[in-house]
Image (tube, rainbow, N blue to C red; front, side):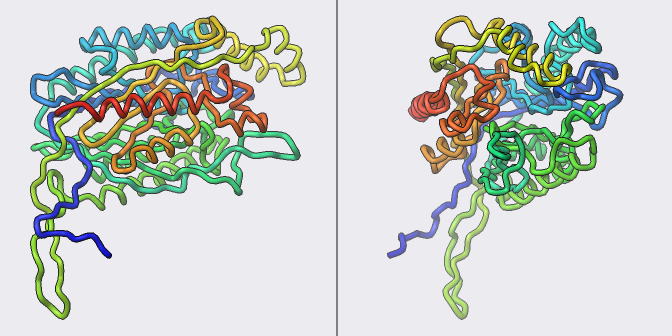
Length: 463
């Protein structure tokens, strides 16, 4: 028997009603900066720019004078050292006067961006990196102050779409695990889209999608946001508002067609995601409304009439910051890795060793590590963010735990981005992400449990 519905019933769209402001700065680095993010890269330094890199800041308040939550979305690669990220985030926290629990700096993870590592300053193009990181912090502060200055009454409404850009990249080739499109694999295709609207009109579009920006690879010589750039351009042309991209739990997900120097492939990928975002937005009712059952019109059949009427979203804003203890693997010494990788070409081997050295300096200092996690509640929606590269199982399971709410999951946020959190099966098959990471099998599952506990606590928060 179907559930009974009465006139006045509201088909509520998950939403937050409060105050919001948005700021944007261009953070494209100078030509000649170090962009060596691939072992076999044909160049160490950039020769130009494909599309601009940006930092977009969304500031939210529950009331006009309440402490804000500040979300920073930036086109960037990954933090290779703990101290570089800590110095950057401390500058932003100080510049905006924020509590650490109330700031998220989410990197898009483009593999065609500048190297974020000050210890590479002795390498070609590396001399520009320290100055760029200082400027990146100042631009983020400027965008944040602009967002806070533009605070106005606003509504954030969410829609879920689907996009086939991401594919599983766990491939077994002649018995060897490699990183590339697996046509028999399954990928999470969820696109979570937030529409932020104010009295003045559209304020921003927030896009959460899990897919490695690895279209442009070792052949590429241009700084690029990868597919995110064309996606953002398309969405902003159609909505007239800035678009902020949040990288999802994409540890094993990437485009089918990747590892190229052809920028048109990256743009094609971006348009694919952009159209999925626009499709999801098109399914939303007008800003600040929800479909409401207003009555029945008698025709050849009795017709239930639903109309978009004014509706107020949940006003709750809350933040939690925690840590989950993860066991560390016993990592081989660098001398042993030099022997193990002796057959790899010299340029790729040196890049691998440099990354292994950064991992051991400041992150690995005992049998366990305290992995930080941030959890936010934005009205009806929940947000989980952490600095590692979790597999998509994290987001699919969290959405199962909280099926009636949008759950935004962000990798590469507020910390060094060199720690994969693979599934147990990935460890068993010897996947790259499993032998590269510092944490033991079961870490992904421990992270999931910790996130569930944080989010459950947040849901007890009173408006």
